[in-house]
Length: 588
Image (cartoon, rainbow, N blue to C red; front, side, top):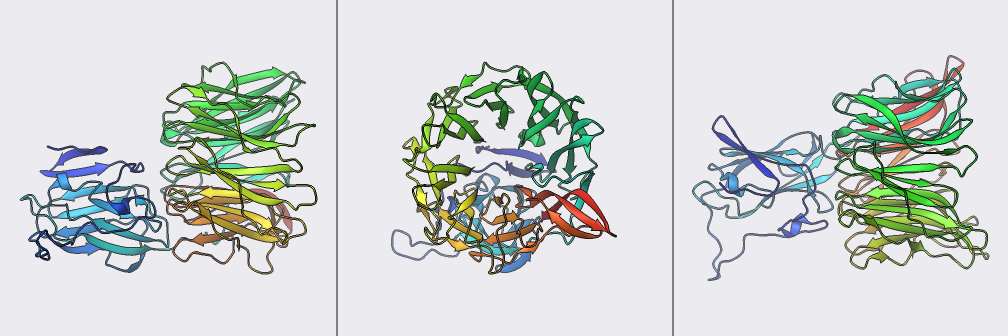
């Protein structure tokens, strides 16, 4: 029996069932299989110029019907053939589900005689999006008769909605307007939120988990308790393979500054005792670390002191390699705002802001090649300007590991700050020249606070503050060109002063969550690929009881189904009593 990459066969009650994994398909034959594609692979004349005759092997029926709307996001697509299909021809090259941007959506395929079923590889499909089921004419019956023409079937999934009421995860004693929790989602739609608050005299880390199947949050559990004399900061939570999650933070006490790393083990449903990869004497350079975890569970920590950036790796979370300096050494420079991204092969990109008293800051990056087992030399993404400086930046990665970065550039010299972006060209081995995204000169304060999200096809969306409201630009991956800026917030709504959280799902829909200064309420706005428009704002922080008084800027995570989870600290008023709470809402 023939075999195909990524497929396994299981004999069940005399039938063959073919399945493939939910990983992105890297090698596709049909033109439509790639992002932004389109085309036809059948129905042409034969060599004599005659039209093909109707095949004895055809598609009789299929669900959902052509043009159906409000299709269940977790539903199964089904096709009935006129004869028994040859399982060897029903494979990832001949049967595809195409998303609205032209990318192939991962599916699980089942063949049973004359019936074919496709289920989403993820728990569901992103909502209010157009999909096309494509069956190539290369599919045959067991006698070798091929479909005469390709089969196409398009439909639109049901829209997603935010819950009418937010869920309270925890109640806190005090409200810190600068505090933000951490949140990640795994491939099955499970979500983990992490935060810290004092319990008595001890700073304590808590976590709660949302079950992707039930949509319900579990009770908070204690991850770690600091010494009574200590406190913790600089928390960073990242997802690991198999539903695991890794939390890194800095702990201070009277004698030491330590980097802690804790792992949530999905297999046991519990947090493992934290390890301490780094520790220095109190009073030395401060330590801040960020983790990256690849598909094999290898952990990389990039730790910064005031003036240097070090990387260390572990394949078991216990034994660590010797720290290696990866920054661009300039005496007197200070480092800040470091970020890490890891692709599906395990290659890592680190980026950070570096500058000193004598030289203006620059954004640098270095890449870890997993095959070579080595870090590249640090290179500038945005070179040191003659005047001005670079503000905080944001970066994201597409399904092929291509990285896009956006930042605010304070040009100085009387030139207003603006938003710039660059894309890493792997073929050239470097970053593209910065592109200016905002409308220069339209705001007396310039543009600021960029946040970026990248979808599976490489379309990047940058959202920023300008003229009091939010604006955006979108990179088309095929043309590698940025759209003209457009308004995100409607007239009369400001963009707030806190950080923006932007997510993109696998088919390109985008959600931005923020807190307008005028309302102090957590608010979400969605960009839909199907309409090509930003839609009406939705207030998402209405509490289960009482009324919302104020909310911090939320943090968000998107899963493989396009469900977006927002988590934030806020204050609610219940019968005249103000409570500080950790709340969450889901766009699902």
